[in-house]
Length: 74
Length: 555
Image (cartoon, rainbow over all chains, first blue to last red; front, side):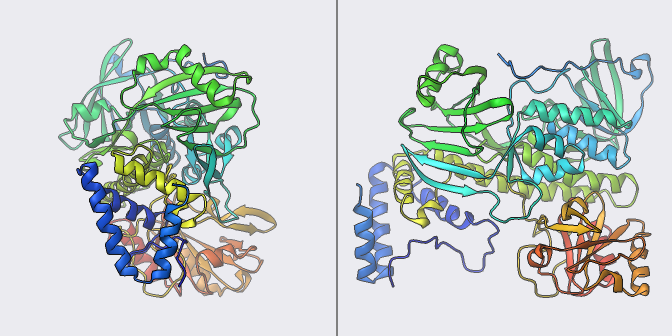
């Protein structure tokens, strides 16, 4: 399966009436994860987060594609 | 300053109570802003006499609340000022978001066709208030009193006792019900020692109203980190009379007094517009904001509405829009209670439903603010990563949050709803704010929402209005004779003569059938505020009566 670049956030069983809500739910949770952390601590949390999600995805072709896109323009 | 608008000055008339005697009124409303006016007009239209007190003698100074959403316009239609607002205002649906000098995202507030009202209009607040005051003055049962300032409230008993100061001295009036619409710094809230809790955001914004000839499209433009105002955000809205609202994020360190000076404002605008465009500065203000609400909006005989009850950040235009929806939720309930047709516990559901809506507004506007004003380096990095990815990738565009604009709440958890007993697709479930649809009556093209509201209505979808069995018609008409009447309106894909005494609407574009998942026999019970109360696959008068009892707190 290629890297999914379409909106893909959802919570099973939850009904959404506005298209932006699931993405905003995720984004808030992401920012909340970093609350009260120093920049260094946040960098560590981000690194661990990438590793956890990468393992969950597992598919190397998807991960290579994501890593390539993430580097673009930086 | 303020060259495009002449402020009306309303006459102060000495109130009769100054001569002595205390009069008890069914409803007194404090604050003749957009929300207090909406409450006064809606109640007066339903036959309730109201006294509306305001401590000033003109409308809002400066443009202030600018964006009025489709849902608020639908309420304004029902109080008779929708057309005035829409024809004066600038209608728009499209918002564009720029990151540095590139457009990264745009949205359309009204992706569905076939609605009467646009997603949003921009209109200076003073126009809305002026139209509201004009409308209120047409109604004989609105007693609108300018230069009447409330100085104390005692609402511990079965009515509220209100002391009012006027240029001719003080007087006292009593109210069975007091509606408080005196704004974010509500003095009545303070007099009653009621808390309002939430958070303040550490940021300042400069708003400037600029008059200029420009051919910018009627769209909302939002910039993150633009070259003309690096590191901050800027928002541009077009209003009536060639007035443009420009909103510059300044940061917490900015000095509000310094920033307001024309010699500091003008260069910011020049940098944005380019040096050669002529413009005039009409009004400037620097603001901060809070997101907070009262625990409950009902305190015995006192009902808080609008900014007095809840406040949000301006990103999303969820302030005045939600206040107008507060009064729309409140007024029909209060009318039923005043008429003795519902217990006063129905007013607790005003608080429940509008607290739910306020929480949704606070949640969305807080999220927008956190995106626009990141609180940490990591948060800023994520924000800029989203904006960088948004140019090429749809998933990131959906995360760009420059304001989630005011939309009505789906009151799906309300105790007034009758739960579904049959399968339906689509979003028009119990508690939903109604979708509009184009309809035709006889030969005239009209809108569904113009037929519902201000009373309970049952929409019944039939194959042919001319072929409805007379016995069934008698049952329909019987519902209109109930203590709380329900008017049955037939909707049909087919044009046909309506049975005498009933309206029949032709769903000529098929939108009703589509949006309400209607099949022949489908019936919807609609509240006076155009929310769905219940729905069935077959009309049954007993079930409609039961749902009506539930929706009016009589179950």
